[in-house]
Image (cartoon, rainbow, N blue to C red; front, side):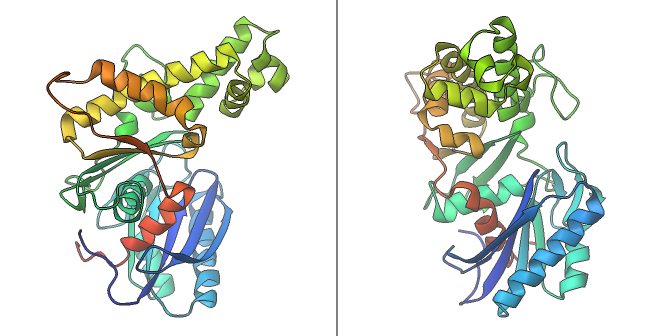
Length: 320
């Protein structure tokens, strides 16, 4: 399935997220041999410096590393490895591949973080053995990754598969990208927090407001905590979130006809609270109901480590 690491060569995988930069030395079979992480700085130059320092530490632990792969949130040109922009990160028009290659002397590949997570899940995780997979990563925002016919699909410029920014409700909530009604605005962790604050404001004596201390302090984690106590309002908010996620899933299925849909990101820790209403919405809204079978909609298997594993796995990709 596509290009993989040759022989027993090791690669460093770096996953640049909104709050932390995770790194690891990864074997060809996906095993992470060494791990480390640092907080994500708030400027583009500081992010580059943090990545460089992390690479130095990982190389010191494993001197035989032969390449570096990076998964970064945002719009990433492939194969140039230039990060154009990200709604939740500080970098703008950052030539990360060139900078890292110059500093380290190693081959470097830089791709979108959800792309590399999708590749990891297709090779080693919940979609292992599948040649056609959709990944939707539900966290603070929503990322998307596609593996089609056994290869990561990136589009003409490398910036395709932004599933979190498909429009699902043009009259919906504002999105961090500046538009209105994106899937991210309706089905992300940020959306769950917003739903929770609205609900707590309407019921300031309810469990959500009491757990947070005040309605304006409610977050997605507050909603999850309340749902864990079987709070009716919190459970309804997960149903609402899952419905919109299902809208995104059914659109992806209709367009790409994948063998499996993998749901990752931080919110997948809530399991069936998220997946059950998402599956129900997908079944209700699917195209060709009664004539077409839906693919499995499953939780990511690799968890937060998918970005590091996937980044390392694209490090030797020759598709330049």
